[in-house]
Length: 497
Image (cartoon, rainbow, N blue to C red; front, top):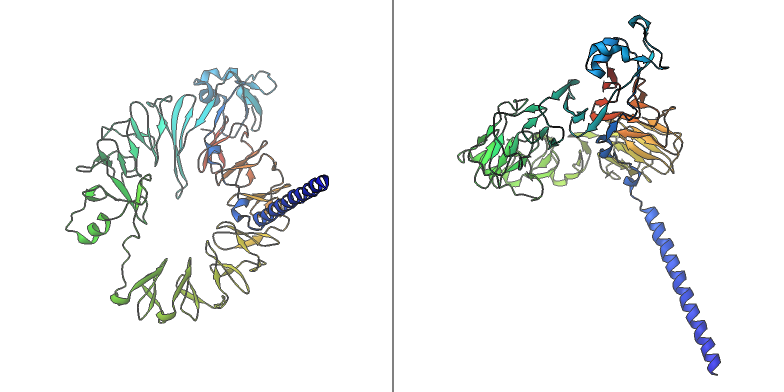
């Protein structure tokens, strides 16, 4: 009897263990299924690694392999790489043979520049160190302007890049590569709040918006450095700031008698003590002149209403406020139509309309961005990845800033990742705006910001190979501007300067 009971208890224990294992396995399987089903669309995005930009390169073999370009001369190359034009005889052909005279050189010829030290250390925001000399690359993205400045007095071992174009070393404070000598600051405690306001442990300093190089930066008299914060508004950079006692605009203290501005900004609440900004709820939205103040209310984005009308940017948009509803993004409805940017559209079905995000929406008939149909996209399975990419159960779609869109017909759906705004890769190919880049090496391809890319073989600008660039030594410095051991590049074009 005792043996029988022991066997029975053992069987029960085994069943319980088996059951627990089965239930646990089933739970794990179910959890995995849920994880797969609820996989975030953002998992598809391979975010740009900003650290990619801030790397260093050192020419270890002390030999520069160079391709002779139009406009080059051996004198200029010698001046550029050795510091003296008279050392041009050191330069040889790529096979080591001596160049007897300048007339032997043809465009495209391969040459060697021996005994050449070249080291580049990228910092951030346009500051970099080349051969122990600090530089600042200044870019105007609107005018395609580019200037490279040498900070002759800067200490390369002590340079510290702050934010918003400011930097310091053990002797000076710099803005966009220029020494700020109009003020005396405590370099140990100095910090940049935005482009216009900086402070140290004792004082606050301010520059006017049009003071391009901070030549006239001055002490903001009366400002309390301890409690001083910049007020974030819709305009950039913000000209508004405050401390516990005063409100400031463009380096001037605002009088409390100016009630419209003073009262609005004086009581702005600091939302995050660890962040340098204090956010305003809005930037002083004005009520339309013809609105009923008692019933006026803000709906969302640029939409508002009172008991009589619906408004878009203070313009009467509809006379059906009782059924007005903000849908999200640029979309609102008055019960009869869906409006985009304040204008009604007949394209969208109001009964099945659903706002998604990033200005994407859907109804029973399709998927849209700002009323433009995304051809082929299924409203039943659509997922929004970011403001440029959406996917359904069959395809990935790219939607440009002007709402033009297309599907990736040959993409491997299971392995694709998004590298940058216009770049995608899967297990076999790299794509630029949906087209395969045939030369790209999938394994080593990376995006250096939005404009430059490189792999183990080539450097690219917007998907096009830069023939003159050296992939091993190329570093992105500042948006449109990059450097390798051969050249500087602006908008993908090499410079012989």
